[in-house]
Length: 320
Image 1: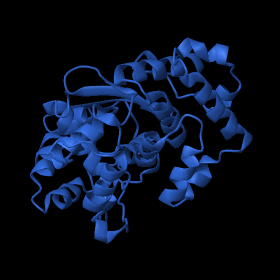
Image 2: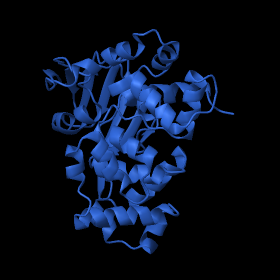
Image 3: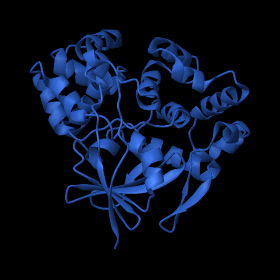
């Protein structure tokens, strides 16, 4: 066994200080043992909180305190052992180029949690304590768009199954730990399919939305790179121009695919949670809840939403 101690990338971020989103100079120590990368002293990182909070659909449990999944065409098993986070069978190049950013390892989540709870809000204090290890993944935009189109009027197990069928039928294969995994299919690959071809993924009425979106990307009518550069209101408008994307789905894409942490997605579930926690169980319009969240959480709205979602699901809050 051969161990090397090294330092991962050092990031200097200068974001909105008023929102307390500024990244400090952050140096993480990594220990490389054979083909595994051990993250030493990483705070605010709990696998179940990250991968079971509804933000991504391609990571699944694979044993105690371990998950395996695929992103950006790479597959990795991540486990938590004796306080260390271990990325198994991966290279330092993939860690630096893919997993460091994907897992949002440079962000100071302790500062975020302190900011969200500094006014003594008992709801947010409980939510943060329940989901203390949540991190917002930096997902690939195209995959996020299609994944959340699939998520509309759907449940997480079925969303995962549809996406897995989409990838296994139309993605590129690769081997990891002696098993075959598949990348998320490109817009070009999907655009060449027919609705009949797509029926194998069993997405129902969503097939036509997926195919339409892919064709628009390939034709240039929809420019995802341009959307990345847009201010949030314009990016939301552009996303909502895509067939099958409404208000809630666009907000999810803004948060999980574009890193717009001020985005606070509101669906029926979040609506019930907010009514229960902040409106004495009195029904409210989605617009009212969105405005309340914007005023209360500001640029940390997306973070607050994830803590609230995880907390409410764990405690079955808002379930009639």
